[in-house]
Amino acid sequence: MAPICLSDECAVTVSTERLWKAILDVPAMAKICAGLVDAVEVEGDGGPGTINTLKLNPAADVGSVYKTRLVACDSASHVLKSEVLEAQSKVGKLKSHLLESKLEATGTNSCMAKLKVECELEDGSSLSPEQEKMIVDGYFGMLKMIEAYLIAHPAEYA
Image (cartoon, rainbow, N blue to C red):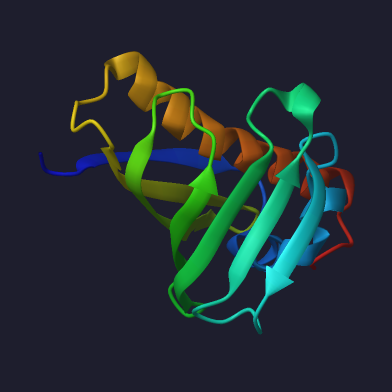
């Protein structure tokens, strides 16, 4: 069966540049997403090929580890592509999982986060609308945590 492709977008009330800087600062995710991310390990220089491992808080009920490999990072167009290497998923065992996010300015202190997820379940089945929503909501939930942190700390990543 062909991979499942999901896409959605989410309005964010911080500038594209601030959000981009925060997203790229993976080592700071334990501080930025306190309560969700307990610790971070980075293997690489932050460029393509870098492996990021987020150790998640068990109380957050999202699994224990989220490990990705950075595939591409384009700071000029604010596009980030990564391959999920390890993650627990409530939707089932995934055979493959690719993520692309793009930030587009919508104002001085606002932007639109556009998300594309391509995944394939190991058993080849398709996702229900509820499962699709769980995947998208997981990514946007973390994005909203980053947004809240940036609003609460206006001098950071300025």
